[in-house]
Length: 405
Ligand SMILES: *Cc1c(COP(=O)(O)O)cnc(C)c1O
Image (tube, rainbow, N blue to C red; front, side):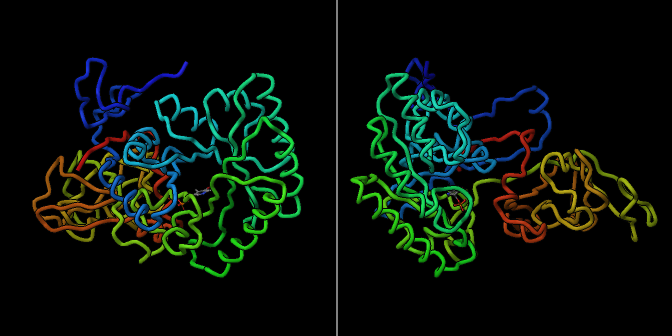
């Protein structure tokens, strides 16, 4: 049974418009009590889709929404981008694909992870498109189609042109292609590869991988196999190398408003803000210390604000005495160690600070003292990681709230 999500049409069963703000489904009511939230701007997602469409005007855009839509909530993001004109959705896991189908997504869903166990039946029942790379997978899915008397299965074939992660190696392309060519149960909808060095801007390596992709395309054509679409470009490739666009592009990060490399698309708008509120304020005398291990000690009379966000929410513990939150439009340093659920900031220089003032961990803030932004790129650099990890580190227990501008 496929469940049709009422949100798809924008109308409920009685034909009245649905509210435009999707509230998160909460496991426990107390989730709503704590002011810690990840706020996702749906208008920013649509804007970023347009930026991508303009950069690759003749290609289909399939939104990459693995890992719960890079932490933004895959279902709401998929619904938004589906309505805004994305041609399809890519996920990593079979489970992620099923979640989106069950949420009413009707566009094609490509499951890129390459691992399906023996759940081929599940895959077909949910009308998901698998990425295959060896002859055994081709035969397994052909068997399933025969067994369940289904329509031919649409599949994408992945070629390893240098990433050395997933995909048929060039020397094995002929074998997989033969398996597909002799299986009427299989329709080769797509041919794909993935770049290793797109984010570092190594265009020569991209061109080399594209050449090897062309060679694989030719080998398939020699066996009468002509995939409807070919695709290779992630966000960085699609924003930097038009010849990588082919018939389809697979952006993830850019749709969430973040440049894979500074300067590639300055007009992207970050879609997520993570914020909370001050729940306690105290005045400290010089010599008094803060938090586990007393790693910070006041040198002057200080005002310390406690906020209900910690490392179990995705505020990295390595920001202890080493990071900031935005309060009233300016930066306040994190003092003491970040604990699991709570963090302290030094608000001594935040004029007018009061209980319930908003504190931003990620994103922009405008306030009476100014305007500032903590970007995913800034956090990533500070933490020695990449913006992708910053986004996917915002934990599940932080409720996602969806807003229009
Ligand atoms: C994650 C992923 C993408 C999207 O990458 P971004 O850099 O986030 O745009 C595209 N293709 C594959 C195979 C991926 O795993």
